[in-house]
Length: 104
Ligand SMILES: [Zn+2]
Image (cartoon, rainbow, N blue to C red):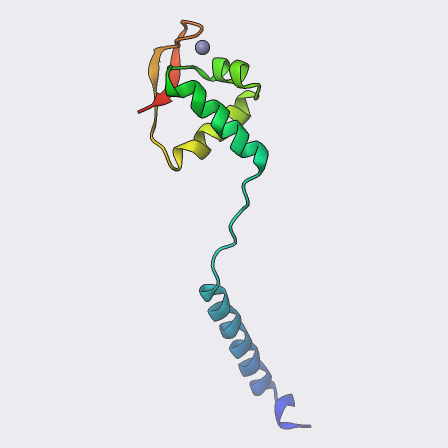
């Protein structure tokens, strides 16, 4: 039996290893997700649409070629860096009273 086979030391070494891993994890930056070219193209397309008009999700989907889930995800992506107003109003395209989106 060696010194390191003693149960207390094995547990101690495990604690040290865990503490080291936690320390290393705390020092490394969070992995950033790469934004795909499609996501950028979608964001640019939607941003162009709401730059000059208040539009509902349906019209944004129709005009951008995205489905509604993609429109919402894209709006959320844009809203990280730019202020988007979402409020009840009249869509400039379909004239429906609904939630419309436009840049502030
Ligand atoms: Zn509309």
